[in-house]
Length: 274
Image (spheres, rainbow, N blue to C red):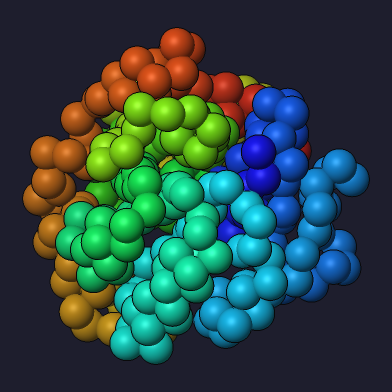
């Protein structure tokens, strides 16, 4: 079996590549460059750009399954690029496509469903790795986390668990026309996650709660537009949907193993915080 993994150097893709290699399948790992990929030597690193679909055409030939990571921001250009990739995969007689999507209603979803290929859609909750993007620098340099709405709950998921489900869908039968919503095993507040980081690293961390106005101002300064800021504050922080904090056992049902906890993730990545 031969599988092409797009986004192979990303948060989920790197785990998929490693897990597929353990399954004794041939892996083509797509990267924008051959340089400094950090990918295992056994993976066949191939160069391509999701924004330039024609660069994937040669890599789609003679593969059985495709893992496609779809971009969060579906501009018209990205939609057309994803649409073209799916068309090229169909023309190359790819049997199966597994797509990672981060929200319901992504416009590329219907294109995948109508592609004629076996399809599976994976829709995870927030990544545990987001803790690095938002908190690691200030914890490392100041011992501080500045955040609004610290009691907001989240069922964050370990990227390796997303990968484990993707690998199942890529190599096994029985996942056609399935949409898998994935969460971690706990519903934790930001305050609790920061406490766990402190306990595991042994580093005191002060949590400074920002006002709503400070969150708006900081988000604006970081380049987010007004619509996104309103969505984040009203839709996710002040009044989050039930799905944001509801625990699902999909990972364990599909893999036979409990989903990894946030504490496990922090233990694996604690060197980023100290």
